[in-house]
Length: 161
Image (cartoon, rainbow, N blue to C red; front, top):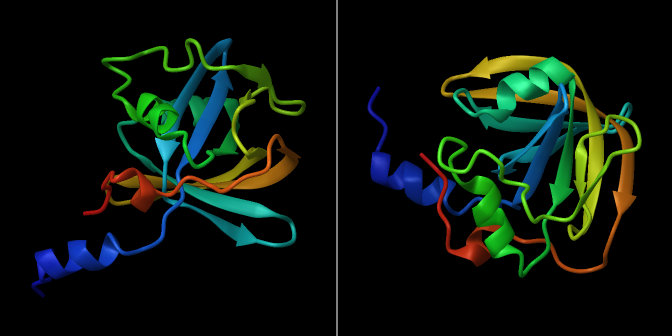
């Protein structure tokens, strides 16, 4: 079966994606990444799914910690999304200069300038091609600020195969 690559990319880029800061604390080391493939997966218990590239530094840290946080970035936080989205090989300490505090349950860094956050306990992971799906049960949540969420479309960034 041959997929029309140009059409596939055009359609996938029209999906409305938010941008999120995924944070983790593992063995005293904190880390963050930008994700846009995040969605609610269940009401009861409350769960979310995050798709993470298989070679991302965050993935083994999340597996080890069995926890992570999803931070909803605010419109106007494009620079923060770009900072967290940089290659860990080039920028190993992405949270330098970013205001954070430890999450009350998992200790995952909470981005205090984000709109809000969810602390999640890892329930399962599943291979998904060049990504891994991480299913997390929401164990705590908080609202930091009011405002509109940052979207991939608003940033001009592209992330779709």
